Amino acid sequence: MIETVAGQVAVAVTFERLFALLRRLNPPHDLSLTAASTLRILESDGPHRLSELAAKEGVTQPAMTQVVSRLERDALAVRGADPHDGRVVVVDITPAGRDLLRHRRAARAEKLFALLDTLSPADRAAILAAIPAFDRLADR
Amino acid sequence: MIETVAGQVAVAVTFERLFALLRRLNPPHDLSLTAASTLRILESDGPHRLSELAAKEGVTQPAMTQVVSRLERDALAVRGADPHDGRVVVVDITPAGRDLLRHRRAARAEKLFALLDTLSPADRAAILAAIPAFDRLADR
DNA sequence: TATTGTTATACTCTATAACTATA
DNA sequence: TATAGTTATAGAGTATAACAATA
Image 1 (cartoon, helix red, strand yellow):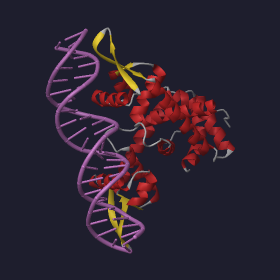
Image 2 (image 1 turned 60 degrees about the vertical axis):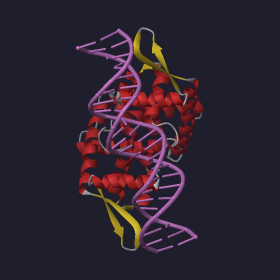
Image 3 (image 1 turned 90 degrees about the vertical axis):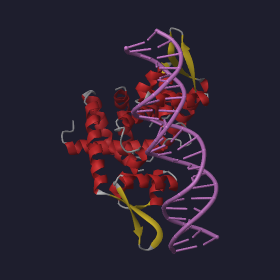
């Protein structure tokens, strides 16, 4: 493990730069970060209450109301009712939403691997070897 | 290397989830992603023209005008003139801007290593072993 | 005439405060 | 009275179009 604060900050700077790189891989005139992330949650974990989505995304309930309204307007998600509680709004992804995620993902994978191709085989191997660990890190 | 499209997309999904994780490591009521990234460019590469910053950040010139105006209002950056070309605005980071980056970085490093501590030693080692490769990837 | 930057306008995204409807 | 969600309002962040100043 890295013991010194300076060493830890150096690693954090690398993550900072990696974050900036991944951010540029995002198609611009597309979904916002929160909209895309919300759609991914619906895709992978199924329907959610609006308030659950707000909590998972770390935004307020009014902000999520708007995000869901825009997703619904664009036919990427739908609002539904909860038969057991009239106050609740249940949000789900639509087939068009799944399609969009699929296309975005393919486009990003292409750009990412084009970048990885510019690295040395050793660097590429080091990154790919860390993928399972990153996957578990992202579970946190 | 990973040959199948499905395999590449799986790797891209891991990066997507990693991106979401790093995004949540960001202190909220703080700088925007673009403002922070712009400040980092000024910190690491020195003063830039406003148009250079816009190009590096991938935003329009009017958007960067506003970002710089807010940074200047908050005393994190300053506008200066170019003695050789009266049209040009040269932007530089202030000591307060450097301080802010330093504090953000320390806070992020702390959160990041608290997360890494929850992984197995093997996973942690795999991620740390990939750091130099990521650093070179971020140079792209 | 071309380049550099700003201003005008409009839309997304976010927050806090106030509100409505249901429990 | 408490909870789930929406509406109202304000500010950041972005884009395109139009403009001003300098080269």
